[in-house]
Image 1 (cartoon, helix red, strand yellow):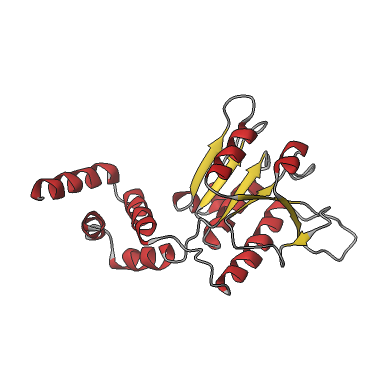
Image 2 (cartoon, rainbow, N blue to C red; image 1 turned 135 degrees about the vertical axis):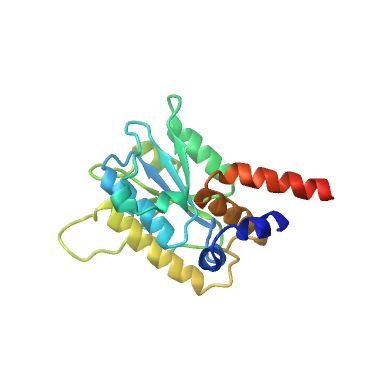
Length: 223
């Protein structure tokens, strides 16, 4: 906290108020996984939606397509959301799912063809990793099979699927609103919030990492 207090002295009061407010509403209880979303504007729009709905982590599987952020669409969201990219080896999808399961996530695949739960009755007690697939083919068979559960957005028209960025935004809004009405401890812990606010402070200060290192050294010497 002492390091954060000194970093806060270097940024504007408005930014401090904003960081405190937004960090208090951030979550890792719900996270998003993108598999081979090849249209840059959709991938960037999903990153922006993650920020808007307080989702701190975005996992991107780049098995066939590289993830690129379009700044005019993401509107700076990449500075505030933690991006985890999987693009090495023959099975980045397997590695991503393995890491998420180690962290305690239930893997939930989004599919318009799901015969089971909708986003309105998905169980929320355990941390959830929502997978969204490519614009045309959806989620790969491999990931569908490795998912713990499938979920869908209820639809009532002739068209059977939504644009992936629209589907992600709707899903995040519904689940976030549902979390708000529960007693689940879905927000970040105090220590996680402190670490996040330090990261954000570093990102807006010129030479932020060096400044933080000097502050830590000074505090350590005093102790």
